[in-house]
Image (cartoon, rainbow, N blue to C red; front, side):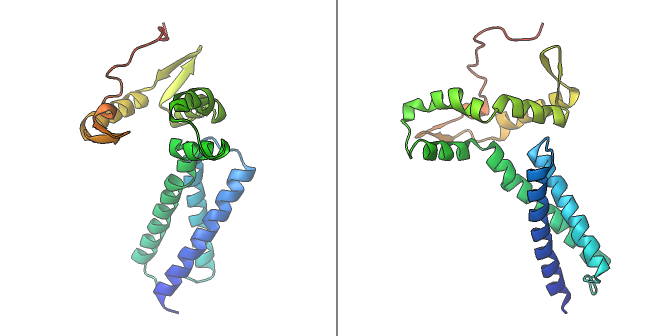
Length: 199
């Protein structure tokens, strides 16, 4: 059998195994962060398919470099899946809007969306709990005596994201019919309704 056909069949097997591992993991095991869990699933699928491939001599004809490239393609595919499907659906406000419109019979008044986001989205998606859990698991925050504080890693990431936002996000972005740079500095007009800082 042609080595490229073998590589294609092995890749199809990887996709199938990844989807099975992902399903079993999400349905039957504990998950701290969806993105990290799905990336772990990709590594598990690579190990299963590579192990089975070697055991069944399915990689005959492929040299070491081609095997390494194949494994890297699988890992990149797993990462692409992790970012593009479960993480987007889990985190996406855009999908939430579509689902909420569907739930409410297909239409919601435009002037009610701020209320929907503050009264329903935050509660229904456990937004605060999910995001704090993700940041704790990522090592970017720590919580002591009811105070959430940045770690050194969190400080670096916040600095990077502020720099990127201010300097590399679009300055002429379309928002509801007008082009604006509002999202390059969303804190420009930020005010605390009360002083909630830790003492």
